[in-house]
Length: 94
Image (cartoon, rainbow, N blue to C red; front, side):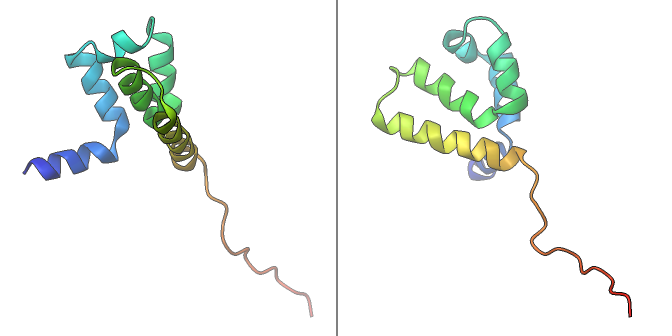
């Protein structure tokens, strides 16, 4: 059962941020004020979660910076629209 809960939460980082905001002070310790967490909630939720983790657990190291880059790429990948893989055929006049 716990695996299902963790799996569902991993699909929605915005839900995790909302639950952390309501039930803990984890985001408050990592960020000064509410401006950056709100922007992170809207535009870059994976990066916001990772930054909160890093600031609450000792700061950046080399591996944590690599994971931060992966989070940024994941945020851009989930927020961008995908171009069609194949263009529709144009009608030809005969």
